[in-house]
Image 1 (cartoon, rainbow, N blue to C red):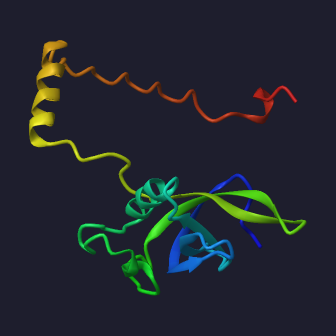
Image 2 (image 1 turned 180 degrees about the vertical axis):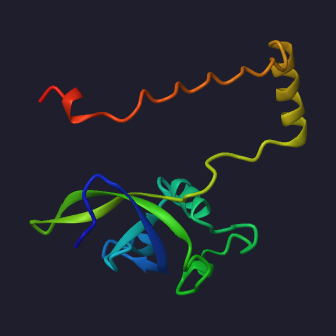
Length: 157
């Protein structure tokens, strides 16, 4: 498997589905594939303690809870996220006395925050103007002309 541990790796989402663990805990599974064709799975747990983080990650990788009316079933075997780009950070974990590479973090590749509104942009523009506004352009320094080609006799070794 060519997923390097501790690296931030670009991947494509190839499948999503809902799963229940042996304990009864439910999760959304996101299957991803790297450029070499290797596959890993991220599990977003749906427990009371984890569901907010899971929903945040799902939205970051392209799930629109409003478009799907908050229906988690929209992720069960559908292609609503298939083909989306994402990034994973991997780590080694032990499971049943064996070490294996697993996804520590699943992230989207787009914007991390909200878009700045027109009013917000106008306010920023005014703040920058109060700082002194536009400044005169600084002329680029001329690039010195080359002294000519280096001759073998100029090389100290």
